[in-house]
Amino acid sequence: MTLFEQAINASNNAELNKGNVVNEIVTKCKDYISSEYFVDFIKDKLAGDAAKNREMSIYVSFWAYQSGCSTTHFRCGNWIWKNPDAPEYSYESHTYKGIGLYDIQIDVVREMCKLVREALYEHGFSNVSIYPNSNNLGYADYKVVVRW
Image 1: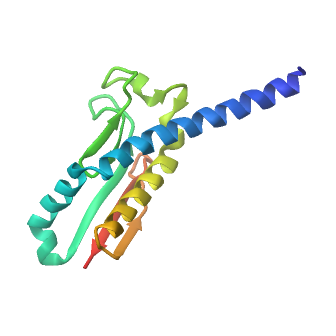
Image 2 (image 1 turned 120 degrees about the horizontal axis):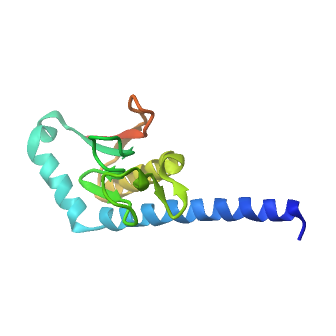
């Protein structure tokens, strides 16, 4: 195998690993969204000002650990995925299975937003919008807004 072929294989393996990590996190989020915990989360949100305002927001985001702040995680409503292979509140939590979580944050958060939208459609909602943002550190911070 030539050095060029080795470089191609290494790049392909890195992309494959990246896709596997994205799929793993998104699958765990899908498990949450298809559970009664998500339904209960929506019901709790409807008990507040959402019913009066005919609008509800669900936040989907990524955060990377900074000293003195929350641990690295992906969030969807009240569900959180944390790196199970690294100590909480450590810079080691920025990498999972050799993949920098910052590098895949947009892909993961977008897929999680799609899952939320699809679940809301299945529960009878039809006016669902997704608003992408980024916080002051450049982390994905999306808002799924449902109106009725």
